[in-house]
Length: 324
Ligand SMILES: Cc1cc2nc3c(=O)[nH]c(=O)nc-3n(C[C@H](O)[C@H](O)[C@H](O)COP(=O)(O)OP(=O)(O)OC[C@H]3O[C@@H](n4cnc5c(N)ncnc54)[C@H](O)[C@@H]3O)c2cc1C
Image 1 (tube, protein in one colour):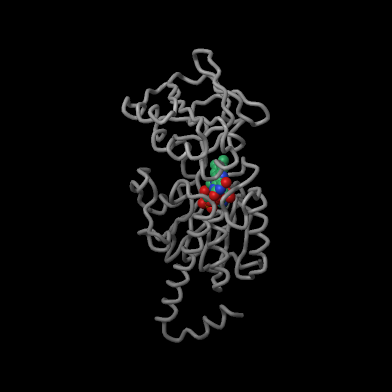
Image 2 (spheres, helix red, strand yellow):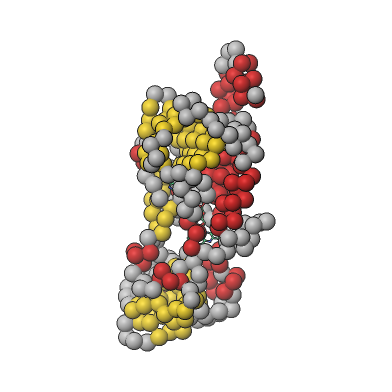
């Protein structure tokens, strides 16, 4: 990674360096695009000790993923990596001005928003969740279900409990849904109980744990229900930044029923030059999906830039500059 002139108009600036942003940077840098990636280095899964399901990286610590990605980007002189935070993005002229918290400014033709989501645990109203989140209570069964197969599992939440339960049952025969004070519709409750999934609707007083390991769920009645691990079936997250909306990107209800930024399969939005990938686009994509989206987005941007150059007369000098 070499120093680029901050005054120069970049081909691409990527905000956020999780798997989505770093993959986009790798593809863009390898395609000779002058690229800056700014990363505050707070990955969403930082609370976990191991990430799963990413082929070749299964079981890796989140900081290891970041370290490997940074190491691999280092050899590309086209990419500059900054461990900084973006403060604001503005449309300016034919491009965008990006301002960092430390006051540095960059001008770029295109911007990729890959800033992810953050989890607001206070919205869950589950006292004790901080001690177990990412250690024995998780947002995603694909990410951590295997490590808790055959254990006594809890599903916390009402919103998606009846959709989530059939999956969780694949990992264990002992599953209880805790709705924390809100009754389930009688039909949904009957469906669950028919399949041997108990439903407990009392408010939860607290999660009892030891060294990050869930031990029991204590209800308002005083009953303690022993559990080893749990999965959350509630919406408690929000986008980490509003940069895309600030630039005029619209939101719409996606296929999972959540209000999300409108972008095509390659992250391209209706605002020219603005792209959004990874969790920032889908809410919860997972590592390998986010990496794939970042790569696909960068390839699509490279295609657009190539087409622009191709269509422009007398471009040989620009091509030579890019390769020097
Ligand atoms: C507890 C937990 C466990 C998980 N386990 C797994 C698992 O095992 N397997 C799996 O596939 N997925 C797992 N996930 C999901 C996974 O973490 C996300 O889907 C994935 O990290 C999304 O990648 P991303 O690149 O979109 O965002 P992130 O990885 O969240 O990266 C976003 C980056 O943007 C940066 N950023 C934010 N705002 C700014 C700003 N203003 N300026 C500069 N940088 C900024 C952040 O610092 C961060 O580094 C887990 C999630 C959680 C919460």
